[in-house]
Image 1: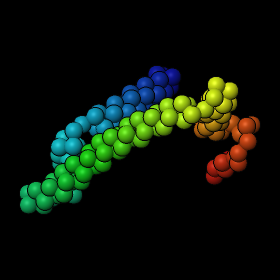
Image 2: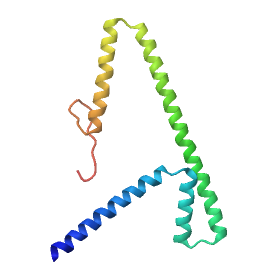
Image 3: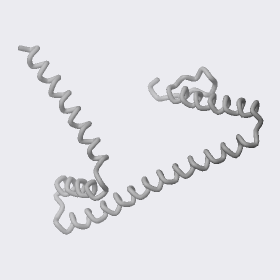
Image 4: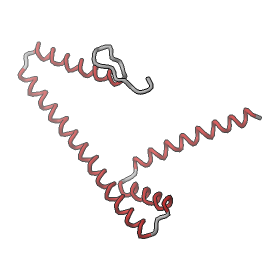
Length: 136
């Protein structure tokens, strides 16, 4: 009997965790208007807002959601523009260099890429200062 209860509790915890992850993902996929509406409804319910308060909160939340959406889109556009600029810069530099210099340059860029990847995983064998974390 204890095993059945324990099994049911474990399954319940797993299903609640999965449903929470699913809801979080859906919230990120919502449009700015939908996120603002969902947030203002939750605030109205939790804080017991009046209709006038709900209307005002909804307006403020919608303005914020729209601003965040604009910043995200602007950031993506700026990133793409910078990426294109770097590609053009690399082409210009490659046109200046000899074949031997290009080979050394490409090796150096590749070493920097792999070094960055190793650092992100916490591998400090290729140099650099280790990152210290609390509790470790």
